[in-house]
Image 1 (cartoon, rainbow, N blue to C red):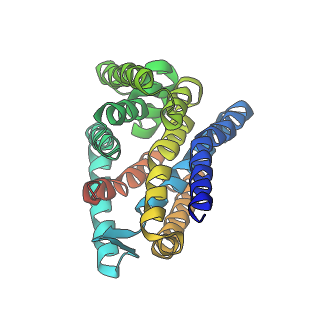
Image 2: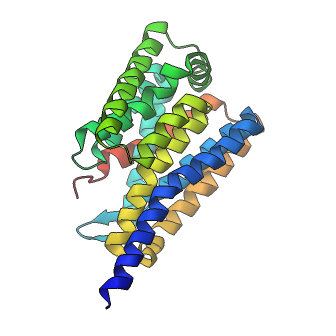
Length: 270
C-alpha cells in the first residue's frame, strides 16, 4: 500500500518538472511583450537564479558551502579570466562561448544528440534566428562590432543546433526543456532567450538532481551564502554601471570571468 503514495508523488513531481519550463516561458513572453528593457532585466534575473546550481561545493557524494580558501581561489581565477576579457575582448568572448558550448553539452550526461542540440541552441540559436538583434548585443558587450565572419560562425553553430534539435524531437517529442529553448531563441530578445534556455535546460535540471541526491535542506545550506554574495555583487555592479562608474564591457568581463572557473572545475561526470 505504501508504494501507491510514493508512485503518485513521483508522477506529481514529474508533472511539475515537465510544466515548469512552460511556466518560465510564459513569464518570459510577458516580459518580451512589455518592452526590451524588461526583457533584458528578466533575462539577467534568470541567469542569476540559475547560478545557484554552482553555488555549493558538491564533491565525494556530499554538498557543502565553499571554504574560505576555495572561495578566494575562485575569485582570483575569475578576476584573471575577466582581465583577459578586458585586454582581448573578442578572444575572451570566443573562449567563453566555446567553454559554455562544451559545458552545456556535457551536463546532459551522455545523451550526445540532445546535449549538443541544447548547447548549440543556447550559444548560437539567437544569432541564427535574430541576427541583427543578437549582433547588437555582442557589440554592446565588446564595445565594438564583431567581424561579420565571427557572427556568421556563431550563427552556423545555431543552425546546427536547430537541426540537431529537430532530429532529437523527432526521436523524442516530449522534451519540454528542449522545446522551450528552441521557442525562446526564436521569439525572445537574445538576452532573455539565453537566460530562459539556460534556466530551463541546464540550471533547474541540475538543481533538481542536487535536491534528489542530497535533500533540499542540505542544498539550501550549501548554496545560500554564495548565492547571496553573488546577488549582492550583481546589484552593486548594476548600480555602478547605471551611475556611469563602470563601463558595460567591464561588467560583462566580470560576469563572464566569474562563471568560467565553475565550468572548468565542476565534475559533471558524477
